[in-house]
Image 1 (tube, rainbow, N blue to C red):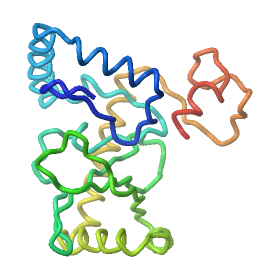
Image 2 (image 1 turned 45 degrees about the vertical axis):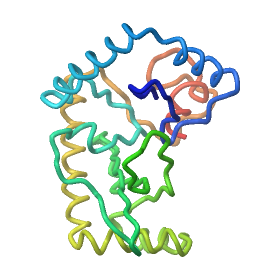
Image 3 (image 1 turned 180 degrees about the vertical axis):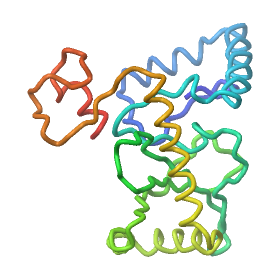
Length: 215
């Protein structure tokens, strides 16, 4: 992730860079021409303006991939910012868009709320299940700090279940539109064996293709 002040950071929930990859990135950022940085800024501004009007223009339906709510609904102004024990936090919520998958859950990533967020690291991730029994089971596995932060989110948003339910439906609706307008994508089933041909039609073995996305 390149920042416009010519610093770089790791994207959340991505594999840590290898030593070689880190050196390549540092070299690229260090020797980045000013003209190219200006071009990146222009493209960023143009893409943001266009994306806010037409998020379906850049979204790709990938079964098993959860998409940040702000990616498929960028005009939303309701952020999940909250306070807990005099500390400020925010949560990012992501959804499985494939309307053929009845997953009924939300992936949450919690962060400290900081003005200088260049190297912001997540505190913890959490799966919010719509099923109360599953949610209680997930809650029981949290530590004391994580439990307090989650409690702070619930106290700040008494209608949290309804918020997630609404966004979940919006995500599935977006997924339906992407299925109609995009390429035909199969629903992934557990019956597909690692050495079978991948259902996406790439010609690769399942274990070396879309199984990586699901895992």
